[in-house]
Image 1 (cartoon, helix red, strand yellow):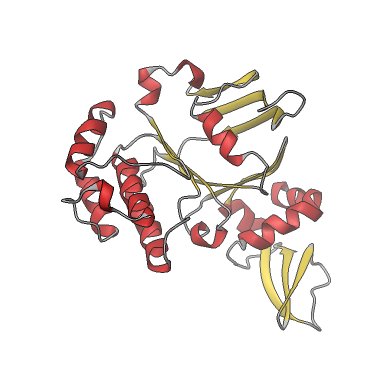
Image 2 (cartoon, rainbow, N blue to C red):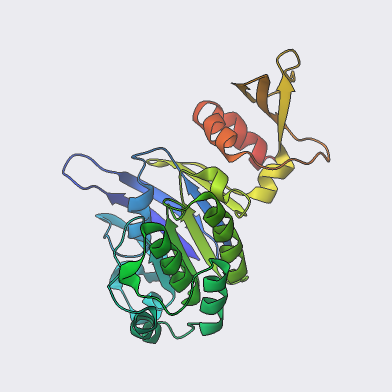
Length: 279
């Protein structure tokens, strides 16, 4: 379990990105970490990894402070940052460098992920495009088989077919004891993958719930201009009608519309949270 306990952090004096911020992330599942630009999503990921140190509070991974950078914790954590460089060496050499740090590294999973991305194993990292480098790095990240995998904007730089491949590759590498946190603005790229939604707005957690709980309590519908449901919690005009969020008090089914849910939380957060948390 990941426990973020009352952390405060700022890049300059007098301005904190987080101030007494807390969040719990349970083991197992794919979390979508969402928020507006400047909310601190990337900062939070680096604090989780122990790459940044909170000025107050602490981040605990299975009870151990991540800033201590203990080997037994580091070997179970991996981050895919939004931007990175890869050395101009063969992939096989890069694997040999990374592999000793991760005792659960899976050559089989690496091969499956490379196949999933249509990437050969006999390539030189220095000759790749940005999108190809991202594919390789994500393959390596999944192959480390860490219990915690963090990804910051993983679909940026990927073309449309590659985004579909990304979803299949991540699903293939997922097991019950793994936790994957995906921070992204490209919600439509990942919404079918997620089984937990965490939406933050600086020091506030606007929502932290499983997709199954959200779908059980909220109904996402589309209507024409003349038939807005009387019980709608939130509506958003689109071409030809409205997208709506209604209470789901029966056995109706709908898939979470992440973009709609995010916008609703910014204006009708209390109503949405009350409905989701209602027993």
